[in-house]
Image (cartoon, rainbow, N blue to C red; front, side, top):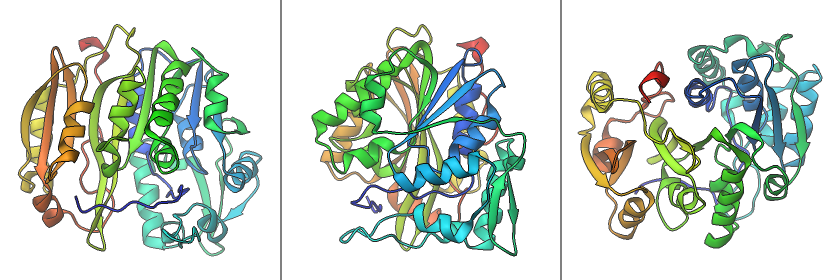
Amino acid sequence: MVMDIFKNPSTFTWIGRHASELRFLVDSLDKPPETVLDVGGGIFEPFYLARMLPQQSRLYLVDVDQKVYEATRILNCGEVLSLPYLSSIACNKNDNTGNPQPNTDLTDPNLLKQGFHELEMAGVKDTFYTDDHLGEIWLHGDVPVIGIERADAREYLSQHRDEFGFVYAGIVLMNMAKVLSREELISVSRDLVASVKPNGVLGIGETPIGLYGEKGVPTSLEEGGAVLTDLLIDNVVQSRGKLRGGHCLRFVRPDNRRQYSPISSQEIDERISRDQLLARADVKRREVEGASLGPYLRRQSKTENNRLLVAALRRDGGYNVWEAPMAKVMEVTPPTRRTLSLLPGLKYTKESQ
């Protein structure tokens, strides 16, 4: 697969990243959660997540990166930070040296405008204020204060079991997969699942390459005890001839009574046929039998995987899976964000679960 992955743990983000995923996941909850955990949420994500939650919810952020932790605390206290400074700490790292790579998503006016549009689509447009001339950013006055802690995720999770109605871990597992063994990754996955209350939801925002292989996120979390209910493509783009972007994954505990997706296969088919890019990507649906999707994705990685997973919905006895030929995906995907996505406006109908 023509994809891109950095060898060093990344803190890269943009304003609006994961916003539609968080909206979808929050709307899927049975009831407003008392406590929410954002693991490795970075600089911006916890604040627009806070805007999506009711006032009675308590949101906690844990991040191991010292600079990210400090920046989040500064913003949370109502102080101002410059976007050029934030672009130097919210960034990818060079493959060989670990040096920061410039994050133009936080300095390019057009990319910033697109980011705020993504926030608007997720219903949290006014989370941040900016001064375009000085390149400064600060929080809207009514954003709830959150609890912020600098800690290793593994240590934190081991101390907080059955505690959160919603846990979001973004690309944390993919970052950990760069430095942990497969067994260690499954152990972390087990701790993530254990931190969720029995009726809660675990959300992941994963890059395409993170779906496949021995350390693939669906495989690791399923072996850690989670049940994958929904997987939906979001923000997949082509950059310099390589595929980047993300998917939204929704997991529940095995003792959760709602283990099947209420989203109809017909709705996914219709959304694909109406989307001007996905409609040209030759997406096909197939049925995958079994209680886990991980084995199927691992088999894909051991052969010449020339297809990209677009969506997967859990059904009784298995999954409905949509895939597109990689060659067609590369052909139709332009180098702009919000391209291949099924999420905006997609409703998780609780009544049909």
